[in-house]
Amino acid sequence: MFRKILIANRGEIALRVICACKELGIKTVAVYSEADRHSLHVRFADEAICIGPAKSSRSYLDIPSVISAAEITNVDGVHPGYGFLSENADFAEVCELSGIKFIGPKPEVIRQMGSKQRARTIIESAGIPILRGSRGVLNSAEEALSLADEIGYPVMLKAAEGGGGRGMRIARCESELPALVAQAQSEAAAAFSCGDVYLEKLIEAPRHIEFQFLGDEHGDVEILGERECSIQRRHQKLLEESPSPALSPGLRARTSDRLREAMRSIGYTNAGTVEFLMDENGELYFIEVNARIQVEHPVTEFVTGVDIVKSQLRIAAGEHLDDILPRPISFSGHAIECRINAENPETFAPSPGRITGLNLPCGIGVRVDTAAYTDSVIPPYYDSLVAKLITHGSDRDEAIARMKRALDMFVIEGIHTTIPLHEQILSSDAFVSGRFDTTFLTKLNYNHNHNHPEENHNSEELELSRAAGSLSHD
Image (cartoon, rainbow, N blue to C red):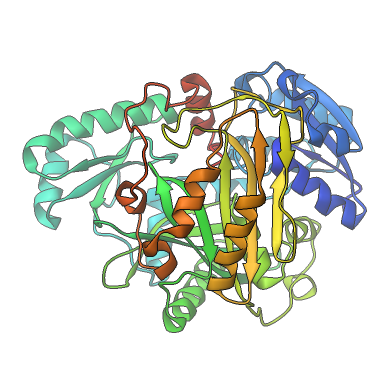
């Protein structure tokens, strides 16, 4: 097992890793920017070192600074959390060359999964459906027109590298496609330093479902079930649950078996997630692989009883899945996660500032992952996530009831948060019945202005974060 690791992240995920390390007897080193000097992950780590100013490009995304901190503190491992450098293959490679274990997939696997086209090929070879579309990146608008004519409109253009909704455009007719190809390429180039885009058939009003898995360094892979992630805004998730209300036991089993073989075939190690879209006929189609732990991993931990972060550490230390996980994996009850963001719930404008009052909900079946405390400051430089509120019940109805109760008891003063929006989501007939899709929020009767001039947050930081795969919202 590791002696000491550095956590190359901040906020609640850094605290989450610290908790797992304390239980395993591993010493921790926190890194922090000048804006995070008084953060809880700095306080609760065994050591802490400042790696730069507030801007993430000069701190959390600065590979030489992070590696220097790791070498100065003499750690034997680095946990990247989610976002920032977690899916940066160059960072994983530098860690290896420096004799430091990267607690995540191998660099070559990160590169494979980072290319959506290569990932599509691997997944398709395992017998998992993918959406009809281009076999590689588009070379011209004429190629896009020809392909769209073949598969039929509407079609979606997507960035070949990166995610978070950048470089995505929907074309519903031939006349608008050429201009949208140019727009998608331009946005992809700005966000990911790569203007390559591809085209695929658009599923109208899909559900968004993802499967969590773990792979050890001895060729074994286990699937930990799925999560429903359809409640989202502009491709950013707001609420997740497990299991999905839409998945049949048969489809779950078939998909799990195929994913297990696909991940084995590429030698995937550590934690990962495979994302799908579900069409109106209940068919799943592959979207992408996230080669890291996800924001929403706690719902899977609740229903499986598996500590995914501790599993990551034990896998990276060379242990077998048979020694880490209960076999077979059993599932119990239902779990829901609400992401509490520092945003005005009516406009989605960011709401950084000082928290002047805080009460965290408690009680059976309630978990809060947060780095917030009374008098702490939510800075304007990073993602707006303040807390993750997770509830677990014997069934979905109980999990919803507990979430409503917990939201009512959750008090955050001094800043705006999305708590009121979550309360309305949980009370809507569509959500309670389980009959919803990714268009849910646009149909919810909630007073918010989609054209608010501040809704894009701090654009420079957001672009840098997305470019490094660091958008916390997944």
